[in-house]
View 1 (spheres, helix red, strand yellow):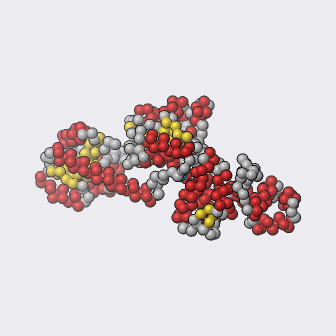
View 2 (tube, protein in one colour):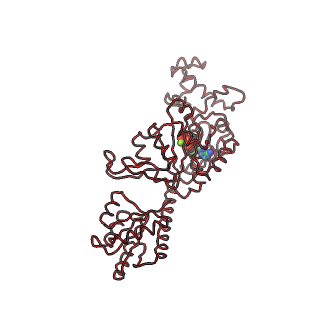
View 3 (cartoon, rainbow, N blue to C red):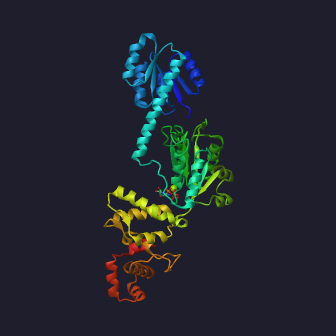
Length: 459
Ligand SMILES: Nc1ncnc2c1ncn2[C@@H]1O[C@H](COP(=O)(O)OP(=O)(O)OP(=O)(O)O)[C@@H](O)[C@H]1O
Ligand SMILES: [Mg+2]
């Protein structure tokens, strides 16, 4: 990442001299001879900086007052004051107001270089610290995936290997298979881990909103754009941008994205000058992008750009050996979160979970376990705390000898639910189907605590 330094000095010669020197050290520099103009630019977010070099003696507005206002606008930006011999006391006062340090003119290059480096280093450390704290608060620290299967292991190992590179990655897989989790694993194991992982769900926003979120906009770019705003691409500079549900973006936005991928630059909404960024892209979708390309909904060139390294996550039903370790992992997590003292599954509950097909994959399993933790009474999650849908005999093994053996009571419950669903709660017909009297059926419904809503959601 290139640091950006703002220089504010009423002497134009000084501005030019500093801009040249700082520029030659690789910094981006913005200069202002007018402190008022600089303050306006800062307040309207037209400019921003990682460091400010601020002169103390300026006729328009003195450095001390300028510093005070800068600290209100951007309290995190370190400020190094520049003072002449006669104004050392002022420099000391500035330190009390929060300036990082001061330089006495004329100062040697080495002094400027060392102070600049230190100030930027300190700012970076502080930022990392707050980011870390925030991540901890939001529990966003990278979660290591849980698995024992060979198939998931292969994809995960490949993910770790590509993490080192800068290549774009396309993560494919059914809903709930762990695409976002893998994107996180790639970022946090990459050389970009110190910078941000920014995620955006492309399907959740309208085209215009998505565009301004991604690329940012200048002030007045559209009605309501009262302030300029940076886009997520800027936020992800030096880090990773995770484009979730990429299959849903419009063709117009695909063109803009392609440009970022190819050239590394883009045009914020309403801007006339392009911005450049250094971002690694990870995209995910549960759509079949090749089909979308063939149907003309997705640009082929963008597809190839994104698909440098495809990672396809296997659905949970193709790796049933992962079900138990995942279920135990979610049990511990949910129990800790909710404060329930649940520590295991009953053997029957585990057996049912192992043979269920999990169309919603790991997310469905996670939700089922969380529900089980909340509903179970003792320290064990039994069949009665699992969603009805899971208890239904598997479509793949209807009543087969290989399916899990249920207790008679559980089997009875499932049969009653099935009959009620088939007859749409027509009780006499249900009783007939089950070969019992209406009265017995009513008792069973009460006993099993069934209601039409429950059996609806069970489908
Ligand atoms: N191997 C795993 N180990 C632990 N947790 C997992 C694993 N795979 C998925 N999860 C968890 O399951 C949930 C769903 O995963 P994730 O959001 O990554 O799926 P997704 O593929 O992005 O789903 P969607 O397509 O619906 O967006 C998350 O809470 C995630 O942490
Ligand atoms: Mg996802």
